[in-house]
Image 1: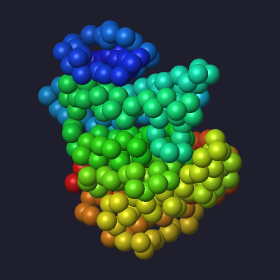
Image 2: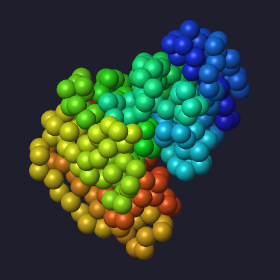
Image 3: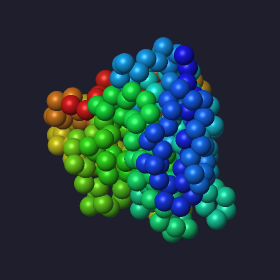
Image 4: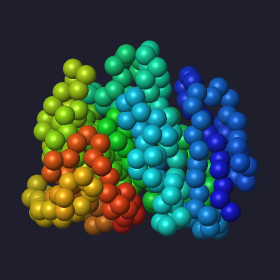
Length: 293
């Protein structure tokens, strides 16, 4: 039976720990001081005697859980790949724009200092308390600001996060701000024609961010991989508006056993590539192939 469980993020400290006693058979559960509701989706054959991967999907700056879900379509794939899935909402800034306080580049432009890192960890812990989650298969996927936030989660909670996928995001500009306690597998997907978060080093909202290759290379360094890379040109067809296979795959060598760092470059791709039928399945398969070693 499919379960639909409603979670919320607190308007102040965004704490969720007090809700660990929630009934997993309930369709909704109210949490005090709600800011934004979040639905946890389970596969149709969910069985609490088994352990399932958990994928957390993070929207971009000014986007929403509904919009990012409509783009990635993870809910419809939860049955095919047997995973739990949640797409939380960020905090509205003074203009009402939803954001994640991720890195030095993006996107707490008001300087509010909201601790989304702790909030999202508590969200994961609440899902673990309520559902049967495989602790070795907890993943984050994000677009743009959500990609930045996915890297923040890998930096801060490497003991929990097995792998992240960032579409058009970037890691910290200041590498000293990230000190992961364990290797985390990383997939950076980026369009070479992205004019918002540029493929090369760039600036967003007046703040510098590393480019796609620099981001992947930083994570190769964090994970103890070699600097050497292998690139397979035109290996994937991820953008339905670009004829034929347009995406090259660059993989860093010498990573620890079970860990991978890759950059998928969509030649001519924009900030929001026209996702092909293979797009989301490809990134899900990357995640599921990289549990915690």
